Image (tube, rainbow, N blue to C red; front, side, top):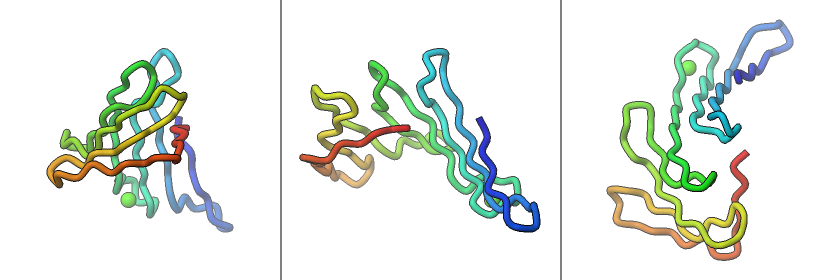
Length: 97
Ligand SMILES: [Ca+2]
């Protein structure tokens, strides 16, 4: 699914492109923030039970790992690989939509 941001002159100034699996869960997102046809941001997702577990960039580097609680869309921590950091997200709920 591709979404366009159009200015008053009818020119595309940004594009958001989403890909979904057969269960309608998002598995990829690319964002062309300046409308030149080349995305500046690409994310590919690995799902675990319908929740995003891992995020990779456009060249296959892992950028995030999510730790989920028992609630729906309950992220309890986010790890940024390569940084050695795991950030608790207590009392914060994320909705990946
Ligand atoms: Ca671009």
